[in-house]
Amino acid sequence: MNEPPLSSEVAPGQASVSTPSTATLPSTGAPPSAPLPPAPLPRPDSSDRRRRVWRWILAIIGLGLLPLIVRHPGGPSDAIEYAFVGYLYGTMLSLTTLAAAWAVLGTGKLMRRMMLSALLVLAVALAVAIKFALLERSERAILFMVVFGTVLCGQWLFAQVPLWFLAIAYGLRLTSLHDQQADAPRTTRQFGIRQLMTVTAVVAVVLGIGRLLVGWLLRDEGFLDDAGEGFLIIGFIAATGVVSILPLVLAVLVARGATIAAGGSLVFLGLATWAELPLLQVVTRTTAAVGPELWHFIAINAFQAAWVIAITALLRWGGYRLAMARAAGSAIG
Image 1 (tube, one colour):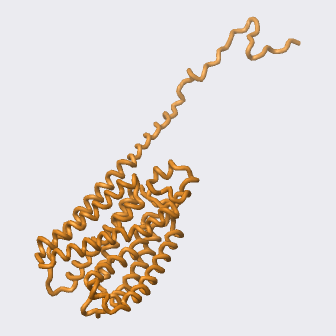
Image 2: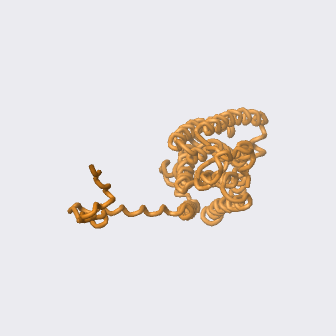
């Protein structure tokens, strides 16, 4: 018996049968495949976003300094008085503190950061000088300008002390997300809520030590007469403002949990505000009817918080975060 030929062979005397290829198969009537979705648009360059952020920050600061040169509205309304004093001192203190933070923790070379920071403090001092020299036309305008200028310079330097400690000891710095991704994970680590709680606890201890120190200084009966009560009041407001607002400056820029961190810092700021008036009475030995009132401190710290949250939130939207270099001191540019 002859075996049948293989499928690839043709038996003699039989016609070859060609099998149609898949390329020439007739259409089955099925609908054509759906077109591929368009490719997603590329995300905007992070550098463009950072440039927009800095333009907005400069615009906000420029517009915010204009009300500082407005004449005191006066009038019988206590609310207007509280709002005016709160905005005046809150703007000066918050912008000076933010300038100090940028000088220490900002991006770029140290000399450039210092120059930009000093220019912001100079702009604040110039706005205050214009207010007293041109609008108030007070006989003591020069004295006021000297006092405010000295306090602003002192606050700028004082605010840098704890920040330099964090920068040198822990490598704290402000970086962009692009830079954090480019750096090796072994070179940087995140600044989070745990580190912020440590800073807040240290700030609370400093406030307690400051109260003891004030009591020790005032043992001398002639201390207030020599230093000047007005200078002490402004200096006290500046010093306590720096200490109480510093956790909020760092809270908004933590890597994760910024909302929780900022909320906790606002609670701490409220407690510090409540504790400021009795401490000021110890400093000035005055009563609430003569010296600043609690509502003055509430207004000052409220405007401070508003300025800090506005500026740092824009920086966060621009991709800036706080990070710690694993090598101590490497954050200094």
